[in-house]
Amino acid sequence: METNIINTPNAPAPIGPYSQAVKTGNLLFISGQIPIDPATGGITAADIIAETHQVMHNLRAILTEAGGGFEHVVKTTILLSDMALFAEVNTVYGKYFTGNFPARETFAVKGLPKNANVEISMIAAL
Image 1 (cartoon, rainbow, N blue to C red):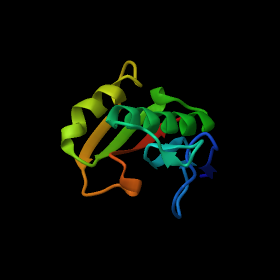
Image 2: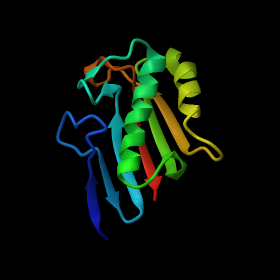
Image 3: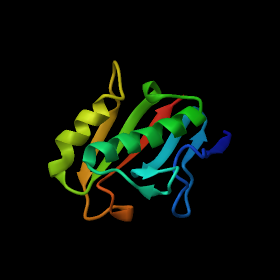
Image 4: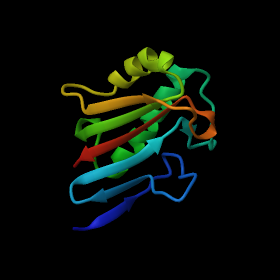
């Protein structure tokens, strides 16, 4: 089975020893994305709604580079700095999907890279 590393300049460069995504067979494993603006390399979002949109834009860029879209996503994991953010993140997240939603879990964690409030990873079937 062939494995390909997926990287795009339209999403933030990895900030550690990992790839934006790895495609093996028809599965695409996207590393957790935080709300880094790929144009600036920093977090410029002013609130959790803007942070979540930036995360979803980053994920879309990686899906597009791999030849897919949100309709191909089968599983997501959402990490939050505080479960009190769940409703706002959930509302934004839901706007990016139509039809069937992927399987998902959501966790509150003690901290996220760069003091982000949300991180989302995905698995897609292309």
